[in-house]
Image (cartoon, rainbow, N blue to C red; front, side):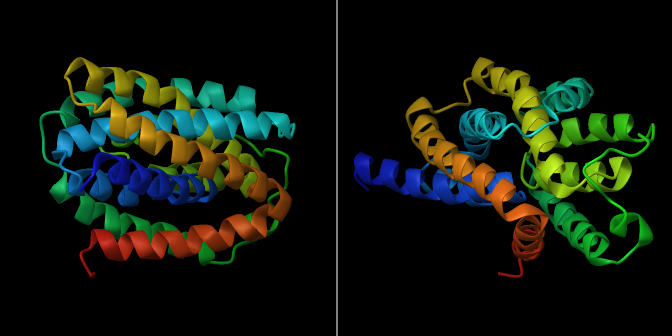
Length: 249
């Protein structure tokens, strides 16, 4: 395959993945197979994908900031708790295959979507004002940081579930915090992949251009369309990614 065709394919995949990542999560389940298809091994694909994730979330964060969506300071605070886990996860990721973990993730994702669909008094009372912050959010962020540093696929679902249920905030504010959390912990994780020579910069930057465009667009749509649009994309994305990870297709 000609090199410029590969770059165009990655750019297109990146647009779709960036949109899905910002609106819900699971975009890396599209980009990682694409990178492997183009000849990268698992570790290099995992590291190269982090370039796109980083730039995508910078783009989405700027978009949210431009629309004056609150929550940036709170997102940065929560992100600090993900850093130790993300560093450890990335160090393990450059040494261990993640096949076994993808099957577990598929089961976890089905549980997440069921929890999002079940009616409850707490969900009916969710507003744009934060409720009481349970202490469980902090160890949850540590564990999520480890998973994000290790494999990344579907981490957006886990962050959204944790913030949605533990902090009781609406999905627009959840999305803002999610973007910042992933942006911040991706920095040390990416540095580890760079240090171990597991990044293809040409492919990574091509993918990143698409991710950034898709992420910017999704950030605008999530604010304009509100929680209903986010929830719809989230449910569909979780089911598709869960079936894929469980090797149903």
